[in-house]
Image (cartoon, rainbow, N blue to C red; front, side, top):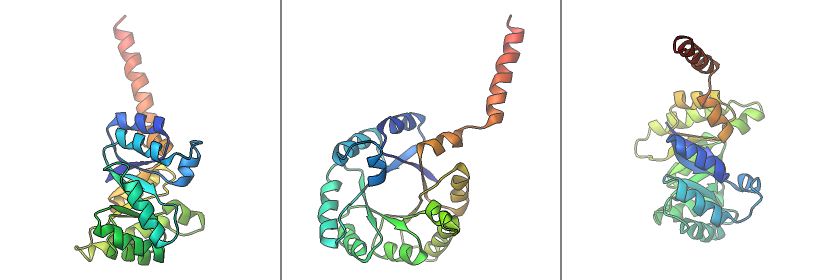
Amino acid sequence: MHIFLDTANIDQIRQAARLGIISGVTTNPSLLSKEATSDYETVTKTICSIIGGPVSVEVLAEDAESMIEEARLKASWAPNVNIKIPITADGLQAMTVLSKENIKVNMTLCFSVNQALLSALAGATYVSPFVGRLDDIGHDGMQLVKDIIDVYKNYPHLSTQVIAASLRHPLHCIAAAKAGAHIATVPYNVLMQMIQHPLTDIGIKRFLADWKSVSK
């Protein structure tokens, strides 16, 4: 499973990139708003200069024709830009056109297997089921990830990859890996939590203490 970073914070992306474990980045208007900037183009180009893998950039238009126009513009910002489009009728229409132009699309805000299947049939490169948001309303978000992957396995000609999105804690990442998700996109704080373990900290302190006791 690949790990993407779900943020528009340049400092966080630089720090995560140094670890050598991040394959891509996902952004959205909400994440961008946290950085107190509306310059999506500059932020995107900076991210793409740091991360060589896929960088998802969301369209803001709602009708198919405007989505297509906006997607073409944003895809021109860098070779590794992917376009995030919500799963709506207009989104699927735009996806069908863009896929024929070899523009990679991440169909976002997925909350059902039906939506995921239609996205794959329309040529989506990625589909992003939102685990945390389903959990918030009492549904099993990770079960959706499992169900989508099971359905895709029945049809090997479908090449759409599943991005487990809206992940809230490290256990979500473990569950996504067990479910067979191709990618998990995580906030920076969750990535840091994945690295940490109290027994690791205790072990380091003990090793150093033992070494100091014999090296005096």
